[in-house]
Image 1 (cartoon, rainbow, N blue to C red):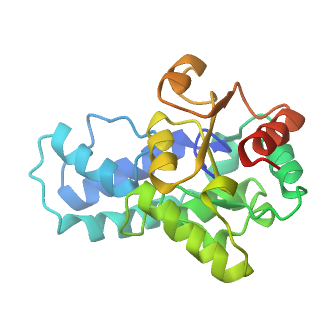
Image 2: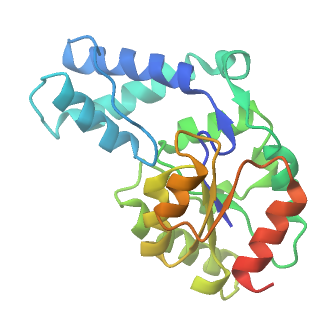
Length: 229
């Protein structure tokens, strides 16, 4: 089981935007005036789109500095995560319920760089429900579909178990993550808790769609249906 973080498990968008704006201005010397859609994107993709829409010359050499400053700016706002953010309804209960399924390993597949992803999970007490060591993060140099395959390889090695396409599920609210799931050889369980509607998620090819995570029984049933469990 792979879970997206933002708008699937929790929402700290306000804090993230502030950290991104500070990091962007530090690196480019220009204020971040125009924003871009972030759903299903990695932090590096978001940065280069920020450069484009804010009319700053694209320079890949800026990325390491931006990533470093993004980590710093986010760390300075850790206390704000719980205050200004929120746990998505039912997320913690759903995670706990899925974790009780036989032979199930849960981790994350996210576009956030690793330190920031872990800070988000820790702020809402979700870290203990996930194996974050085998997770996939935006700080790694892979598109999400390929990163999903990397995560599955890590899980196989860590647990000495044969995790297959048929037993792998990626849960996310983002349309782009549906494509990533299928590229990586996983079922896409979409949750309409983000910007996309249930209809848009179905049209994008989600294997199953839930309105949210408030019904833990429905979440478990969906996973069983997708994996044949």
